[in-house]
Length: 217
Image 1 (cartoon, one colour):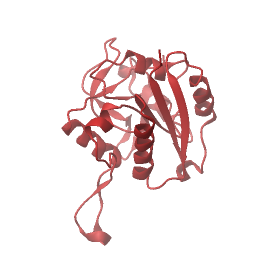
Image 2 (cartoon, rainbow, N blue to C red; image 1 turned 90 degrees about the vertical axis):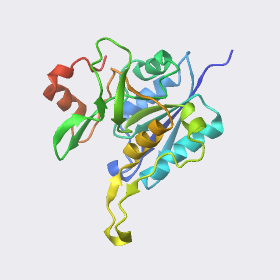
Image 3 (tube, rainbow, N blue to C red; image 1 turned 135 degrees about the vertical axis):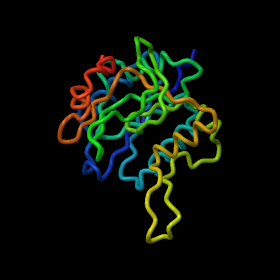
């Protein structure tokens, strides 16, 4: 009996000077030893803009006829043990898109990469409204329902070529398009360290102690 196929694409490029976190690299090697899934790992290096890199990952997944695509940015780190694959293994038919939450820094301060619609309360997943794409798991229902693509596309205001500004980043635009197609977004209680000059996820965990149910366990 064949194992479910998982393609893991690591996006790297100029943001971190073509750097991939060593912990991410080591975790990726461990995942290839999985007995639950047939895991393939590829890097998408130096592809810009980011929309193009994410769409290339989806095209690779569709061409390889995989069951799941995982997109990981090079400055995120996978959780210890098998947190990523455990999330996939626990997914039911409603979990079209699963994210591992991580900390981000915005003009309004530290926050999570997704908007939780409810507390976890021991559940394996909770619904979310939108999400960043640092660690995003896509079931093949994404490209089966959103057939044409592009799946990720930065949206701009209609102020002319010189005056236009970003209206929605590729992550928000994807979330909106996917939800309109009836796909559901969920978050795992396992979070991903987000490494810049420090671990931003750890800072958010410290700031929001009431959200300690979102852990690295």
